[in-house]
Each structure stands twice: as structure tokens, then as C-alpha cells.
Length: 258
Image (cartoon, rainbow, N blue to C red):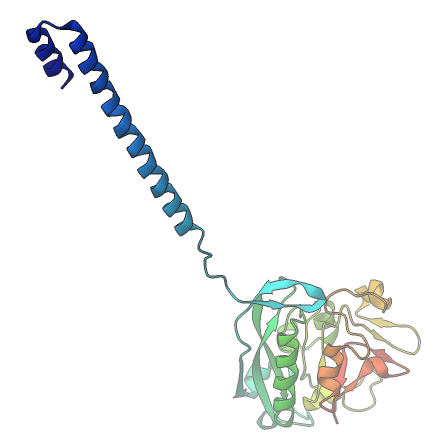
């Protein structure tokens, strides 16, 4: 367009008119540029407003000691009959209860890794409801459990199971004194995190042997049981006795019901 206007000026013979026309032509793009800049600014503002809308966030729950953690999967449990073959070395002829009186329970629990797991216990049929209720409360409180497998995975060797910090219930065995059946043989006892909640007899012997650092019951490590705390009460509120309340022996891992 500039070339056409200049050409017109030359044909009229006036160089001043040509300069005037050139100046006018130069301002027109300036006006257009200003309008474009204004439009660009409006578009940028609109984009910024759109992107500042907050995104949806997952629900959170408050865990013990004030930790904020994502909500986990819901607690789940399943109850099934159990056979002598499934009980393996934890059951043998002469036990005070047979497989027909026992049940296998699958339960949700929180591990020390902060994730949800499924463990297995064998208990007496009359202890099923109490055990599910107790572990539901432990799960809701995010009380951590190292592992939870049936003791036959350790050849029914109670000491090996304790050393592995394995939470377990039924095991057809005698009392440590050898005088009568332990309540574990009836499926009415459970040991919880036994490495960090050891057994101490009247002579000072501890089980498992590697539990020495946890004789200090002032420790507050996750998974340690203390008198009156929610994890202990989840069993005692259901009528189960806690071995940590005994004078001798002290059995911090142990809960039982006659």
C-alpha cells in the first residue's frame, strides 16, 4: 500500500504531499500493533485464571503421632474352615482341639513399610469375632505389624516365629514350663510383634534371644505395646488378658482368653 500512495504523490508533482501520505501510512500499523497487544493481554489473563482452578486431591487421614498419610484401602477379612493338612506341623494327634473347632482368618494389616497387607491367623471358632474386631481397630489406628503368617510356615517352631517378629495365634504346644497346654493350643491366644514385645521369665531369660534391646519398655518404636495404649485396649476391651500386666513372667507380646 505504501508503493501505491507514493506513486500517486509523484504523479501530482508534490513531494510534501508524498511525505505527508507516507507519515499517515506509517501510523496505521502502529495503531494496529497497539490493538493486537491489547488483545494478547486479555487472552493471557483469561488463560491464567483458568489454570489457577485447584485440582481435586485424594482424601487424607491423620495417623498416630500426627502423621498425615493418604487414605488406604478399607479393612477386609475372610473366615474359612481349616483342615489338618493345612495346619501342617502346628497340629498333631492328641491336641486339645481339632481342625473342626478352628478357623482360618485372612485379615488386613498395616506393615512397617507403610502399606496395607493381608495376613493369616488360625484361631478357635469362638474367637473369630473378637479377633476380627480387634484387628479392625488396629488397622484403623494404623498400628504396624511386621508380618502375620501361620506358625506352620516356621515348622511350628515358636522360637523361630518369634525371632522373625511374626504375629501368630494357634500352635498346638505346651506351656514353656511343660506343665499343660498353652492357650495357643486352643486357638485362644495370640502373640503380636514378638521380637519387639518379648517374653521374660522369672529368671531373666528372654525370648526371642535377640530381643535384648527391647527390654527397655520406655521405648516408643512403632509396634511396641504399652499398658493402656489403644493397641492393648483393643484386646483387653474384649475380655482378653495381656501378658504385659503379669508380675512374672512378663509376656509383652501375648494376649489370651480362657
